[in-house]
Length: 262
Image 1 (tube, one colour):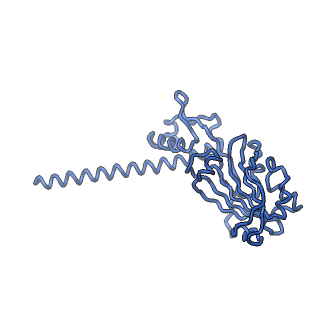
Image 2 (spheres, helix red, strand yellow):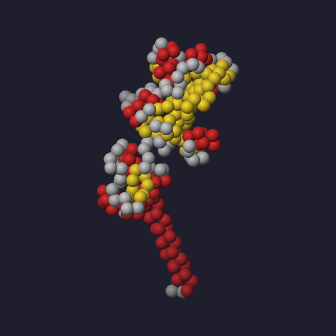
Image 3 (tube, helix red, strand yellow):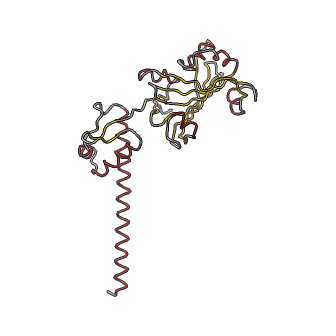
């Protein structure tokens, strides 16, 4: 074989080897992500009651994965702040996510009552002219005053969410003297109106925490937070509560029960 052909042949084999190596790395990364998803579910549902995960070799056997894949999966969970590796102990659970249901209309304190007491730091409270999108959704005249409430919500002293709330002023005036530090707005609205809340329209998406939100939530600047936009109506259909809620994604998990329509 001429020297030039041997060089081309060798180069081709090298390219094939590099491509195969990249494919293996990609497959291992895919498998690690799949394993991390399975382990995350167990972490969040008390699947490791001792607080310590099985040894890497046991996880590899249980999930038919390589040790490298297991390590990568644990690295992903460690990056999320859910686990940590302690010398002489192993991989331990270091954080808990609290479940927030999406199939019932409940305030945060009602949702998390089994996990402790939710407290509210009222950071801003008072009438403001309704921005056009707020006025439109609350069915009030453009520029009319609405009650604006900004609250930092904590569970056991740990920041969970930053809530920005708009309420029609005819209802909001009664909330100015209410105990907003220890009560959900939902309960207060039902007391003020003498009616039950009926339904809510929600949108949930991930957004990047701005500098202010990150500082208030004690989250890393630029971290992803869960943004829940919710417009709540009374049982007669009147819209009474428009909220923009930023949840720390590393401390809250959203869940719900969905039925397929027939």
